[in-house]
Image (cartoon, rainbow, N blue to C red; front, side, top):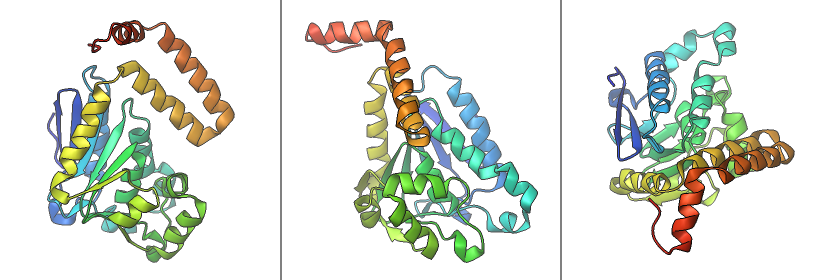
Amino acid sequence: MTFTSIVVSVDAGVASIVLNRPDVRNAIDKAMIDDLHRALDELAARDDVAALVLSGAGGKAFAGGADIAQLRERRSAEALQAINARLFLRVEEFPVPAIAAVTGFALGGGCELAMACDLRVAGRSAKFGQPEVGLGIIPAAGGTQRLPRLVGLGRAKELIYTGRMIDAAEAERIGLVNFVVDDDQVLARASALAAEIAKQGRAAVRLAKVALNASSRTGQDTGFLVEQVAQAVLFDSADKDARMSAFLAKRKAK
């Protein structure tokens, strides 16, 4: 898989996407968006992918945000196309768990992309923020929806209204990130987490993600229904029988 602004690879069930525009803090422009859509298409079609790790090249930024020069030229028609929002929704709905490995800046669209992932591992240098109101817009690629789910409505309002940037320690404290490690350990920690996920039942993890997303978006009633249907599917799966038999026989599941 060859792309102009990202690097994609797959190893031992873990896919990696590296945002590769380090000279502009991995700003998310239209070319990168197109690359990411194509990469997600190709990776979703593979049976050997059990988890996905997203990171930014260069170490100074996961993604510094959207390309402001392009944003300045967009008008209401482009806003209604939800160019960035559609991409980040695809990450949220990607069949397997996605992990953001963040060093440096994750601002604006970069923070929204990290929040679209299922889990976030941050380096101590990481900085998160939604500074859009300072540019006369709002975080409309999912920021007003996902940030409250992660940190609570009151904290999300504070961060969005002020555009304040927070460091990794505060991000962990308020629930925006799952783990904080030294910068040189971020990719290793994210990859280890992905590898741990890859060891689990593939269908079970995928359906757990569907049920969790349903609960967070549509409320408890729909979430319970999706959960029950998912469990019914899994109860008839060969993987469930093999794993439970291995457990009862006190051996590792293959």
